[in-house]
Image (cartoon, rainbow, N blue to C red):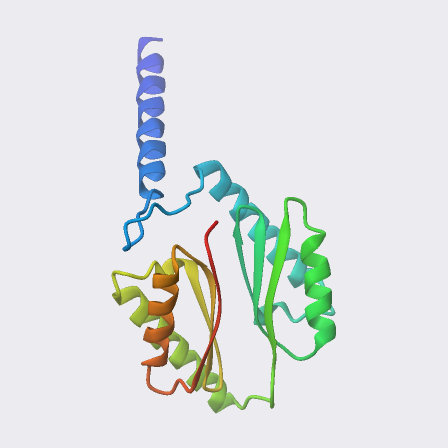
Length: 192
């Protein structure tokens, strides 16, 4: 009985330390010194659940080619981005997303595709996406894990939630500096 209580106590201690560490990790400060709006661990978990539900909903919808969408959530606000074939897909994806429990708002940053992509163009776009992501990760002033990168031909679309206009501008600057990038579209939002 005594070992059961001590095991339980150690488990509670470990959980407390992990929650404290997770909460501490989410507290960031902008490079300009102003505090960044934060979320709680519970809100982060809720946002992850909403993102998963939206992705599942889009995957299950035969009218929407879900593999072309990026889905991100912050405080119940869902950000849709990517490239689709037609406006009907954009409208259907937005309506399906709004119907998901927990979604408070939908920000639609989806772009209509231009000409069809060849296999070679698709491979090149994937390489460009990788280069942009690597460059964003390498920059200590950009919280790049919150930025999604989608590439179509030589156009890069940056979406997600950033801490400040400074981080947004820096991410755009980095993307523009990557070989093969002709145009950078900014669909990022500043955290509220």
